[in-house]
Image 1 (cartoon, protein in one colour):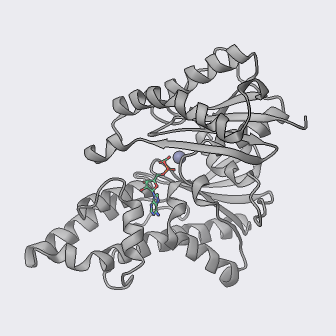
Image 2 (cartoon, protein in one colour):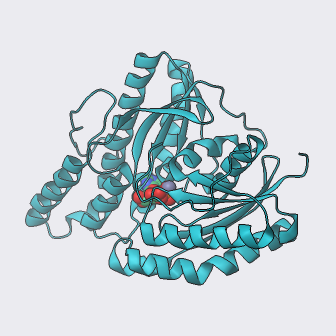
Image 3 (cartoon, helix red, strand yellow):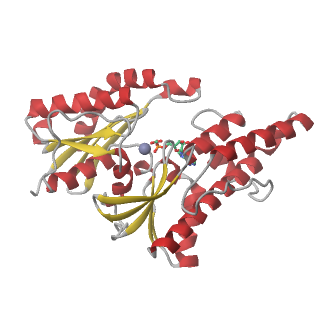
Length: 338
Ligand code: KG4
Ligand code: ZN
């Protein structure tokens, strides 16, 4: 079908998002980020679902308006089924079911983690889509995984975190440093002005392709407490160097794991996804790896890294072409396999 318009809806965590895609090209990509969680230092599930309910209709309206299409032109509705916060998922799921029913068009369920990976198939000028098989490093506030991607819907997790996600390591360390939530982007900002070799943090030891981040957070806490005892202004005087050193450790650790995965699989085509792939350190390290190790790397545009609905819509389109529709009684799923 030539003119296939898919509306994607994302509500798995604290971003209410809607996007329209047409033959791999994003026509609109709207995100309403919820500010309310900032004062609590993390996402409050109850408040997230309320905000989704408030935002979802305006966000969808805006996505249709920006795409300059009428809802009657839509071919299907794709929505995030899971994984995520149940109360948040329920809003997007119920809304999508109703809209698909009202318009009399198919409903397509999308796995959020698959979507972070398949976001690479959104058509972007001057960017090549990955070739199968490739390795995907998905790094977000909730997940840290290395996935072997053999085909669009043939994926296997070959390594993952045994405790915290890498985004949590960024956010929790930022909290210790007195930075507001979510602290990942702020650590990145300060890191760019600091000395990455100034302070040493040890990299946690686990299986070659697995990750652990809970120890790092504790190491940051002890380190900061010890230094602040000696000098009350230690943090403010050294924020750039602390952030640079911490980011250096995390990026180095992620790269170690990727190198192990390349060695294990023989695959040198690498794609990153998830909120933390917005990080300048990992983006630079990957670019370097192209010349250093001969890898082919795929780094998404910023707006397709963090939670967005364009990635849900592209999966919707891929499934639509294969006629893989959801059943009427499909349920949101907080925990969901890849
Ligand atoms: O994918 P995402 O938007 O939501 C989840 O599904 O978790 O990822 C959000 C995470 C947060 O932990 C945030 O601090 C982190 O991504 N993040 C960053 C950067 N931008 C976002 N971490 C480090 N550096 C960044 N530039
Ligand atoms: Zn995500």
